[in-house]
Length: 68
Image 1 (cartoon, rainbow, N blue to C red):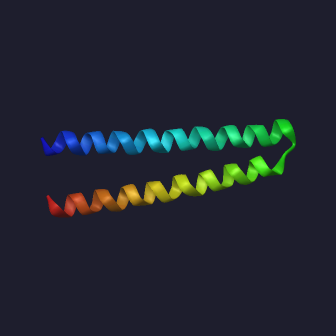
Image 2 (image 1 turned 90 degrees about the vertical axis):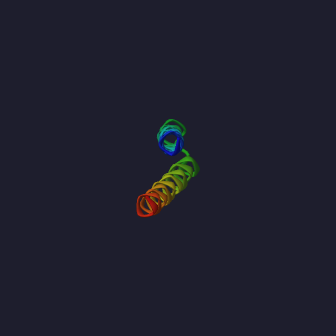
């Protein structure tokens, strides 16, 4: 049972990271199409958020492995 919970948790992280990657790419495209640097700033901020989430996910995985 614990394994399925971990797999579901990993799936949730993957979905979140993928969604943020798509948002980052879309904001960068809007910046180009609209010549609006504000959208590039949004893309940069979403990218930073995505990287933080990846780090948190790795830290949580390390803690789970250490407990197992």
